[in-house]
Length: 455
Image (spheres, rainbow, N blue to C red):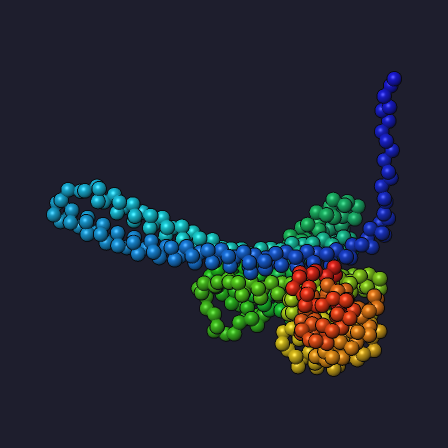
């Protein structure tokens, strides 16, 4: 019998029209922004948890080295006297005395060299974090430009004004040539300063970005500092000073050429905040410009921002919570949000302010917010933020039994919103009434909420 050599029929591949393919491209701007934030958070993890451990180990080794160094100095003095006696008195060399002394001296020198290597490694770790941060930003800019040219392929035409009409026509008909031209343009842009790169995006995409970047001066300084470490060993030169003065980072006379700059944990932490702010603002501003007439996509963009705020709340990054909320509340994005979304960003900012101890700012913002939103959670949140715990307990008792209006039980253990409220008798009594168990019995358990929700 002949074997059946026929290949099984393959399922037809899902074919998307060019229109369907292009309808998803705008979301790349948001995805690239989130990817950059994740990389910066990885750098923060190294900065706050990995490097300090290495530094602590280095300090312990320094203590050991100090003990060896004292022995090394004693042996060096004895060895010096021994050799002077041999030279002056023409004594014979007693190898039994000299060799052990030389051995201990050699051990001290070896230890000293090892310590120098580790000190250099510690310094390089900090420097490389800054270099990596700026490198990730450059990758972000590259991806943003590629996404833009993918969404607006016609914008590549005439990009190089020196091109002849004949070559421009070739670009229209050759995908390979278009891709090559895009690569050349991106390489050209990346050779400019990072501020020039942002200005190029503004002009090319017709979107205002720089006026929304509150930490732009700090970001320009960190990119200039990165260039110092890559090209000049971290030694201040006139170029660095000029850039900082132009962007109002330094006051006249505060720093001079020839000074050796350092990078420490605090500096990397501040640099991370400015990089995160710039990444999400660039991503969202471009996204909204690219699909400003598409309300459905705008709704998805709002969801991205809500998710970002909730993430920072969960991580207790209060400064970043405020930056995202202010970005929404002070730009045209606010008019693109629903009433519930608007209230949500206000309350998230209030939570951050309260957690930072800025109670007067929190109450001032709450007083400017009305109670017309139809979401029951908002009334509950406002009572807690205003420290009206007895009223909050009453409201919780009468409304939180409804499955569609309250919080899930684990959230009472994890959300920073409830830190003070759950210590009160009002909360514990209502908790017992709703969940049929004592809060204190399970309060110490680690219970993770399936999703952190504030609205």
